[in-house]
Every structure is written in structure tokens, then in C-alpha cells.
Length: 427
Image (tube, rainbow, N blue to C red; front, side, top):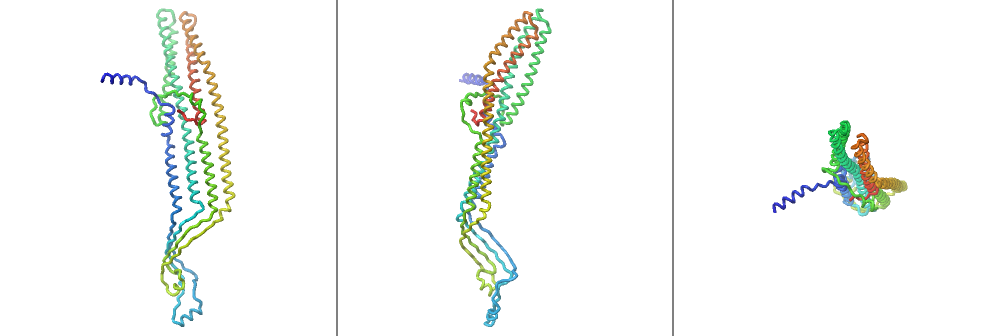
């Protein structure tokens, strides 16, 4: 049993760890990007706003306290005062200094739909903010694409560099043997050796660039990216489904304008509510009693109130015109975006077709260059050409191989850029 476990562990250790896929990097980058926290902040802010708007249905209570001194007050006619004095009744009249401490309570019963329209506007504003955040986050995918495919290209160049080093090392060993036999000049051997060292220096630069890009992508994604996998874009070419988040933003802006227009209609409707007023002070509601006795008293009023503010009519025409202009501006922005998006897709599709056509000849070019290089190796062995001719053919063959890999990856990148342009989901 232990032996079986040991064999399994050794086998597992020999399996190379797969690198992160493009989809994994994009998903991690979105979650790691600081802007992602705005989703929660927007939702919480909207919840607080809606809670405050809903409180418009609660009774509105206000406390007041006032003290006044009047230049004149209501009083008895002089003849009546004289007559009352004759009867032994002292009519003091109201005092010019008056005091009141009270509470006013009002309860909205019908608001013409104002609170409902405010809630709808707050909800549509939330959708606009969420859509704007989504648009900003969507741009993160393009930045990930750039770094991811740059890494893939570097890895291919590094592999071709290693192959080139191996090829040069083989020829270097052959020339070293020929020098010992006296069939080749030492300068030829040194020339190939110098070329191999030059290629090794190029490998150092490539490794440095790879490390830098790997660190950048790791920081951007918030995870340690050790390797990347070449994606397969066949499914993206076959699919036409997708929607850019900018289109959701335009729709949300149009819905917000519609909600704001409904709010204008609600502003024209009457309001109905109940109210109650109570106060302790002087004078009270019984003015005749207060004229005779200067005492503070409790007083109260309850009732219903209907109000209809027609002031909204003054600006209604201009307000509706402004909303219409906003809608027209949003529609114009949508048309501009779709127009530019179509142009970008056309350009990307042409690039994909161009690379596909170039790739049909790459394999044949490589084969031809390999045959020429092998022939040059044979000619050098027979003393027909010098080593410079061989090095040139080796470099041309390597350039053809690099070109093939670059065409393949550039086409793949264009496919994924096209998917980004169309709003397709990467899988």
C-alpha cells in the first residue's frame, strides 16, 4: 500500500503544474481591482437613500417656541370698557407681549405619487452608477489581455531562443572537431561561438522581460502567476453572442430620464394630509377670556389640508425639454459607440484574415529555410562556403520560426480583442 502511495506521489510530482488561464486572470483582476468595492458602496448608499425617502410617510413633527411684542393688540371699544367698569367689571384687554410653546404634527395621506417617483429615481440612479462601474471594470480585461499575450509571445521567443542555442551549439561542436582535424579555421569556430553567446544574451533580456511582465500581471490579478496557457479562440469565432456594458449604461440613462419625467407629472398633483397643532401660551384661542385674565393656557387645533402648488407649471415645459435633450444626447452617444465599435470589429476581422493567410505560407517558409540551412552545413563541411554564410542561414531559419509563432499569437490576440470589442465572455 505504501509503495503504491509513493509511486502516485512521484507521478504527481512529475506532472507539470498548469498555468493560469486567460479567463482566470481576468476574473481575478476584476475581483482584485479597487474599483470592485464601489458595487457595495453604491448599493448601500441607495438603500440609505430609499430608507430616507420612505420616511416621508411618517408623521412630521416640529416644536416651536416664540415670544413677541406687538405694537397693538385687539381690544374692547372704549365705550364698552367704560360701561363694564360701571358694572364693576375690569376688562384688561390683551397684553402686547405674547408667548407660545407648541408642537405641530402633519401626516401626508396623498402626495400625488411624489415619494414613489423619488424612490424610482433613486433606484434608476443606482443602476446608472452600477453600469458606469461595470464599464470601467470591463476595461480591466483589455489590460489583462495585453499582458497575457505579451507573456505568451515572450515564452515562444524564449523557446525558439533555446532551440537556436542548441542548433548553434551543435555546429560549434562540429567546427571544434574540424579545427582539431585541421579541416576548418579556428576563426570559424570562434565566430559560431560568439554568435551563440550573443543569442544567450538575448535570452537574458527575454527572461528579464518575462519576469517583469509576470510580476505586473500577478500584482494586477492579486495572485501569483507562474505560467500562462495558450487559449483556444475557436469557440469565440463560432459565437456571435455578447453585449458591451456600455449599452447597458445607455439603457439605464434612458430609464433614469423616464423616471425623472414621471416625477414632473407627480409635482403637478395636489397633496392631501392631516395636521394637529397644540401649544401652551398666552394668548390662547379664547381671546375674550384672555382679555379678562392674563393667564397661560393649553390650546389645540386638528384638521385636514388640501394643497395644490401650481408653481411647477412655470418650469414644466423647460424641464421636459431638458429631459428630451438628455435622451437625444444618450441616443447619440449610443449611435457613436456602435458606429466606432463596428469599425473596430471590421479592422480586427481583417487582421484575423490577414494573419490566417500569412500562416498558410509560414510552414513552407520554415521548411525551405531549414533545407537551406542543412545544405549550408553540408557546404561548410566541404569547404564550399564560409561560416558567415552558415550563421546567416541559421538566423534566417530562426527568424522564420519566430515569425510563424508571432503570426499565430497575433491572430489569437486579435480574436480575443475582437471578443472584447463584441462583449463576448471568455471561456
